[in-house]
Image (tube, rainbow, N blue to C red; front, top):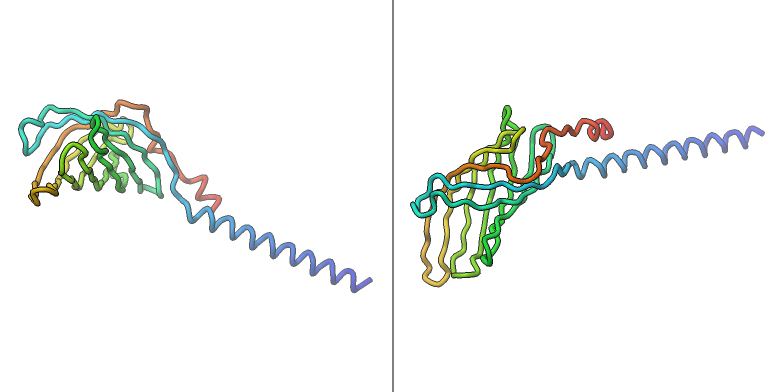
Length: 179
């Protein structure tokens, strides 16, 4: 009878150890993917300053999604489409500073209508409740046929024209699972 009792205790101990290992494995899996996708929307961008005067007053639509990475850190992935021209791809990261979400975004575009390739860095600041804000962009473009560079500066306003994104969403419930 004592042998059976020892065997049951060993089995119970092994089962408990297996559950603990499984629990640690699951929490490590969750910790490896802490990005919480918050949603997708659109903004109407209006150019208010540009090195090319003819661009002032021009507007375009930015489509993008925002993900929350941690306490105050965010990711952005997006694009601008301009008719039949190649898409203008935008991505980067940012953080919550007071009531504003501040991003530094990389951008690139290969024009389909000519030989220019554009790239640059954009600074974006939007209010966390309205997602309206401002941007400025510094670019360095290259014409592959003439081997000529062009530098540019563009600034303007952003007005959310699509659905709201709840950037205030907390990751606290997920973090409680991980602790």
